Length: 159
Image (cartoon, rainbow, N blue to C red; front, side, top):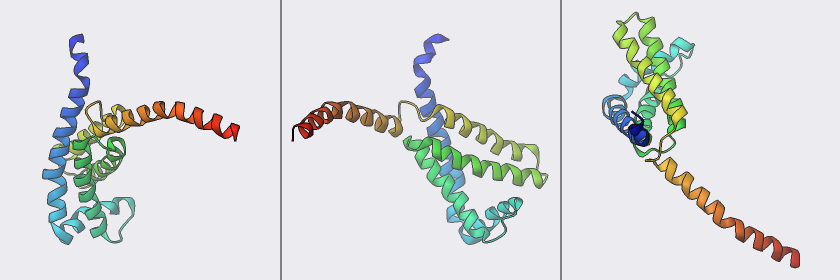
């Protein structure tokens, strides 16, 4: 299956698109649109860490993280930081399900998503992403600036 090696970045793109779309439409947006009551229900999960104040804020932040994280995954922008924040939300969801003694399928989904976000953290966004485009531009600008820096350094030495 060595012939598929050249498609690794396409695989990462498809993963980012699929996870990003679902996190926007199924998770983040409904939480945001659910309002303060929904935010409070979601935010109560923070009590597992001993954080019991203002659950509406924590619930809103979970929804915002899922919505913004989904958008960032689709764009391929700041994928590693987004993966860290989304991982935290998944740890909280998994903890909540396990402590409530929910069926395994409810607790395993956040665990699976945690594995996906950990993989994205280590692999990065791939070649088909804004992260790649920006890093490539920075490298080309850095390389093209080198002769100018040498020229300006020589010029300053002459003055």
